[in-house]
Image (cartoon, rainbow, N blue to C red; front, side, top):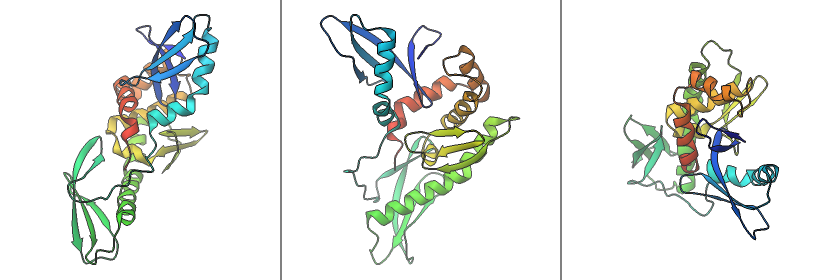
Length: 240
């Protein structure tokens, strides 16, 4: 936990610094958490709850916060991937058109303004096959773009060994000389992806609670606070 320049309390989880307020209520016996529409936390606590009590409650709900802010795909929502839908890429929604072609398996293409999903003329490609083609395209693009993004952010710093894959409930993980980026970052604006890399690199030298932390992140990825806020507000929708 830390306070920003405006005195706002923040709880750090992953690359997100969540603003929170503590409302102390007479007669309350437990600490409850809720997220506002602006992705800020409201902590409702007993009058005699200590700072340590609040910190422990935040830590106990860490998994819930990760699911809420980083997003988990809804298992009950199955996209058809048909003409008229749109796909998120680089922070923008792009129209999707489906076209039949003399091919065996679905294939996704992007011309810079819209996506074209080519499917076999025999009509055999169901939503699962279409989704696989879409995810394969995103993973391929992420493997091409995100390493260049990381090298650009690092500048003269040595870049850890980098892989792009599924990082679970994280956008980025760094362990020693290994940096892992979630392929879904390619759905976000490029400055946001750059921010996550800068956050991970700076965290090797500074704790997020230190005042110098955000200064160092800003030096690598300008307007880091704006990118952090964008990811906090929109991370849950970065899904195919």
